[in-house]
Image (cartoon, rainbow, N blue to C red; front, top):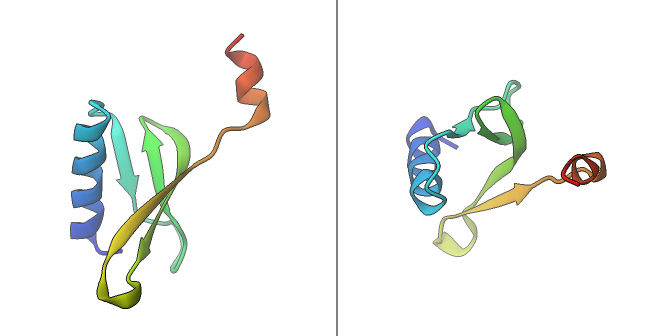
Length: 72
């Protein structure tokens, strides 16, 4: 994913969720997953799909069982 694509996805997610703390960051290693964060907290990944000539971006959010216990 290019820097321009990451910036566009980030802007869209910030507007969609009304949260300016959302960050879409480049992977640490080549060909790694683009990370989705809120502040410094990793919450998932963003994947680019360009099949059939249409480009889309899929967000996968991770929720750990241990995090659910903290919300009680």
